[in-house]
Image (cartoon, rainbow, N blue to C red; front, side):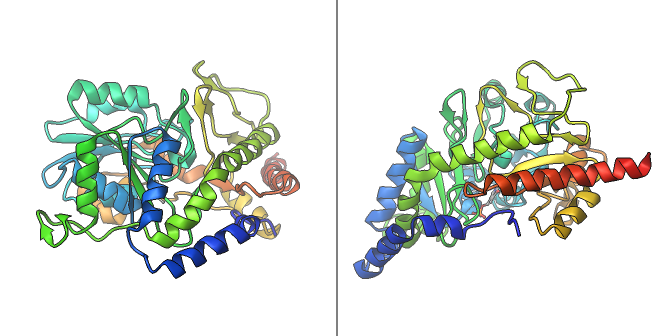
Length: 389
Ligand SMILES: *Cc1c(COP(=O)(O)O)cnc(C)c1O
């Protein structure tokens, strides 16, 4: 059995420290917005190289509160990618604003910022790029468009804590960066948790007010806020884990590099020069491309497979974990029917949704497990081409 992701291995490696941290919180009697949340907020801020961090209940709330802090609401439009987890557009809709999509670059699975300008209307207020699977978006282009059109930028970094673009951490490019500590994210807690980061002292103050019932002074409420706070217990656990994040990311990157070698074959398609080639393979259509200047943290290792059903069956038979993140792009989700999009509107997102498959990826994955997953994948595609020949 080779899991897609195994969360117990990490706990075992830090069991003594984590258990001690949890006992300390239990005995302290301070469970909400205590000193350990403040400490962890400062640790995340310094890890990212940013001034302020606000711990919140989860990554979805982080996005929602970021948009609220920027005064985005009914009548406004926010441009994002159709190829992401539903939380991205959920947060936009929760404010009353409307999501507007632009297609992705199929090589990186991320929003294609070259298409942004065509989607801007008089109602557009913000751009919400997602660093999907831990791969940074082209923030240089996003920021340039935002600046020229006077738009805010909120980064969905739920999958990209530790990823960087030309040495700068994701989450620090736009007005606000949003993180999730859901257990299976690269830095996960033992429940739900999230964080919002910013360099702007006014946004920081607004975020602090919004997360605790819209009150700056306790019991004096100036606006409708929410109850969304990172627990003291989760903060204690995350503080134990954070110092190990870089070594875990390095392990993920070693696995990704090995997968690239195993799944690649002779390059047959041309790529723009700024993208390093990690494929395209003949059998597996394409392994994830990443730019030289990107430090991808490989939340997932996701390939485009010619015959996905054959791959899924082969993995199931060999008891190897796999998953399709995400099978239906957001513009075709029932919940967004009112937005009026049709199949064919975003062909790259639709193509990737039909062909993508994520392989086992977590820091403690063993090299022989990874190599086995790669060879089962290759065999599943070979079997098909032999049968067809
Ligand atoms: C996980 C995730 C979120 C939401 O985070 P939660 O903590 O689960 O609410 C948002 N966006 C993306 C891209 C995610 O992967």
